[in-house]
Image (cartoon, rainbow, N blue to C red):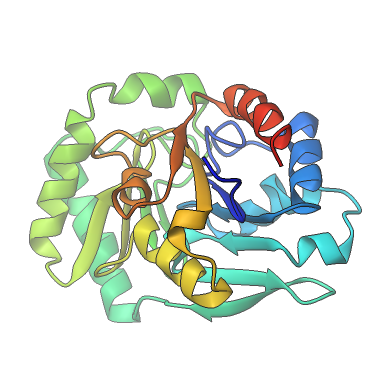
Length: 251
């Protein structure tokens, strides 16, 4: 494969443990990568998560390197670039207040009807991320082990997604992480974000390389693969780090 012009990543379970900080090893690899190519991170997480999980862990990275870092929270419904001082929005496709309320109501009512509303969650189950409404079955701060054990077959998420989607025909409803459902404007998923990235940077999709932990059909990283972006499947941040070590030898 030709060396990529841009390397893109999912965040949770690719660059970091779910909702966790990137490891110093990943931070060092990202800083090295940024000296050579553009880097993008696209995830269902919100901007605050990007800042705490990634940006704050990069230390005193050079602003000229940070200028090559592209942040696409909430599946690319938002896009931020470094302006020399901080990361500033390029665009934001926020949901209307009416759509937010409809999404929040449908998620709660359908989760309760299906017996999927957790009585004692680890943090908030529903979150308004501006451009995305997210349902986290066990709460935003659920431990990784509990999340992985909650729905190993994906049947619970599929049932909830289908039930909510039937009530929100004008919105995009999709499975997110291992316990989550995300709702955005119609037609928005990671493929949308990657196409926006290509349009804003002038870098063709075929010149990018994407790393993700859910590239299986039906996974939330699969849309990136489906639009022709070369992709590498990973199993946790340690696997990503090993594969980045190999990539850097070729750049």
